[in-house]
Image (cartoon, rainbow, N blue to C red; front, side, top):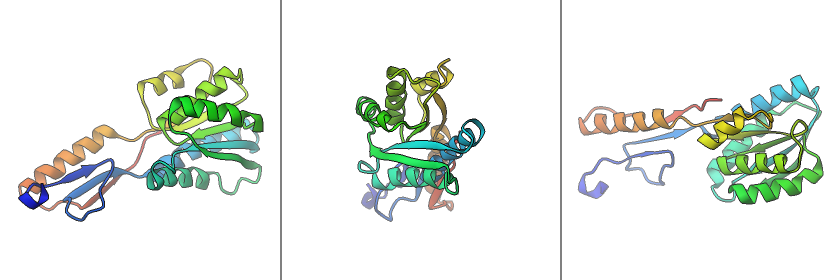
Length: 196
């Protein structure tokens, strides 16, 4: 398409090429850090600064994105001597994550963080199935109707999630395409923050 003169704008996931006129993406490390800051506030405010934490990621599926989210979350917990990470495993689909978190509950985490929607749903499912509502909480990254319902549930398992802003991403992509078609300058890289 580029070789035939079509202007290329990528969003959410870029490609390893220099011909897109613009790439719009979320700040993946900031997405993890935002959830991490919420978990930090919970640990400091509710657990006296002491907690065992389990991390559910997807770095083996998407190393750059998954790794950045996990780095961001861990960075937000730095300097907390009472926080111990008891497990770090990948499980990005809800059924797989539910099984993985069920196994990890034997390490008695107080907090579970999941790097994506499927991991978060699976983590909440595992905590609920184990009857640990009120004893183990979950923080996550991404958003969906299902996660909104879990956030609003009375069981208090899912405490917070950090979401990307798909409407802003779509708007920015369309605006970049229009500017490129008009021959106007276009910012090559646009990085959007998430929302807690």
